[in-house]
Length: 100
Image (tube, rainbow, N blue to C red; front, side):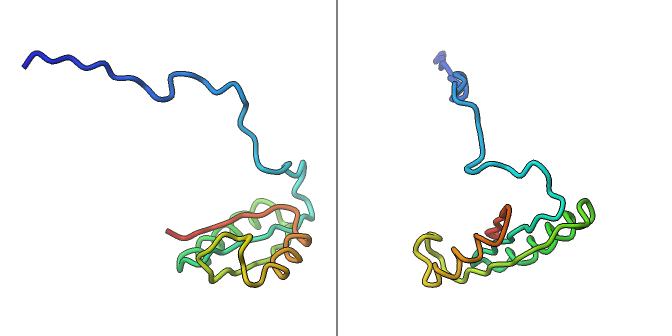
């Protein structure tokens, strides 16, 4: 067999739009409240416990607020959406864990 194949890299062309987060990042974490959003999967809470532990070691003035979701749906379709939106207003940044 003398077949030849041309292999193309899907990352060959650079995207001209720089990557950015979905919301502005806090400039400083001192005294901030970090929201920990635990998805419905079993491992999400232990993952967030380790995230909280690590962040507390690095930033001693951080506060944390946990939101548990037991639903396997888009967050905009939560049955407790009003409670979720109230929780969001009380945090400065969010770390989300799914748990797979």
